[in-house]
Length: 324
Image 1 (tube, one colour):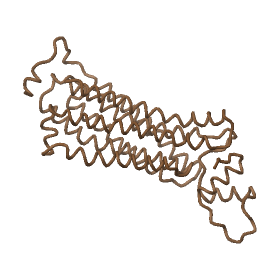
Image 2 (cartoon, rainbow, N blue to C red):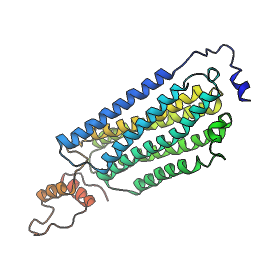
Image 3 (cartoon, rainbow, N blue to C red):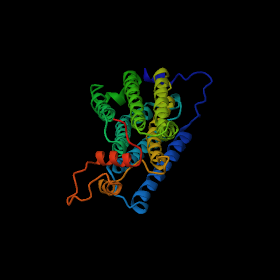
Image 4 (cartoon, rainbow, N blue to C red):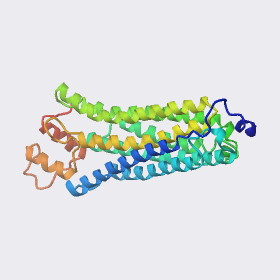
């Protein structure tokens, strides 16, 4: 069956056509951009602001390293013919591409979830944790677990996944299902800052300006949506090596866009009065609030002050009191 499949190309198709180089170029450019953004973030935190790195920073660095694995899978797949028409390949090349695909799924999942956890950690540092934030944490963790449990158990034995690639239609449908869950999670994460900004006591135009800044993260939603479209095309075609190249490259583009979007938000999130919305450490908050007179300065001991309460008091002192 596989021999007949390889031996019957559609009439008029150019078997020398390849988009491997263009796809690899897109992945490399976006990865380099994300690397530059992360480097600038590291320089700003350590050299300019002299602030210690937070959990969101460490997760972002890990996400960048994992995204390098995504790019490596794209390039390795292209070496075996990913991005060419399947009728110009043989069973060996398709087997190698499918083995790479199997590894790619796990690397992609870890890189994407790590970046999402980094964004959630950043929002926690800015706004505190709401029920929507915890829901996004659970949804992201569930997405991670689903990929690690369902896919290895999808075929019996496991090597059937890459040795019997022609019949892997059900696995593609699994990719489509988790891709939709991933897009839903992106939308939920996108609404977290909007929900918090709407509670701030500021003018409508000021709120819109801050919200539009956070909506820079919507670019990753578009990347997730287009990745789903590429998976749908993969389901509907027999030219698997050609269609799968789009899935590979957009699986690499999505984490890169996520990194760039988050760091663009950090660079732009300033309130209209010039105050950085991202408030720093607990001790810095304490000193700022003490100057406002909201704390009793006659206390010999520093009162217990949670980071969330300190943030709320400082916003109150700046005329940006959140609504209860």
